[in-house]
Image (cartoon, rainbow, N blue to C red; front, side, top):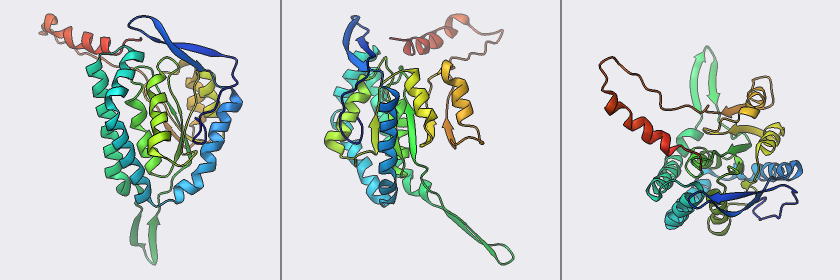
Length: 279
């Protein structure tokens, strides 16, 4: 989705995505071309000035609407999440709840995060004033294991603070965010270009990062082994990118004492590891 409209990809590379419970293909997604990804970034950049100029109270209203729409469609979203990822329905419902909690938090902290600061007489005859401004276009790269929850660690905060976004769902589990994009277009009504969505793999990620209009990159828990160096180089202080929100994959660290009952120990790590399995 680019500029508020669905666009047919001209890519020659398409990949199936599956229902892992039965091994059946659910659909196909394009691996967007460099030109298509850059068009999405251009759309986000074009919407940025008018979006950042909108009073924050008006931007918050869109988040209230997003919350309302997602709550009304929460069971459908949970079912799509389970169908495409393979996790249990109850766990998918929890993912939706946590996504909605982030919308709630973004609403509650929007005014605080956007406030500047003022300090009179920081030195003789000198007052200090700090203003906070939105940065521009953010690329949100989604992992396969939490297709809905992790994008919402970033999406509502970026948007309510005046930034625009290009979201790339996991090529393995694209269905849940595809449905969210449809709801944003059909029922939330964000201005065209504020939210954009592209599909693809590592080459799409590299294009998102390399574009000079991309002012920040977020990628949750996705390892991005092949892109790690590019990610780090592009986020260096000397480069054009000023922000990188990146978490390397790693979990289930366990400290075992000599007195530990190993029969009791193995249960929780096994459960957590099962929850994070690939579809």
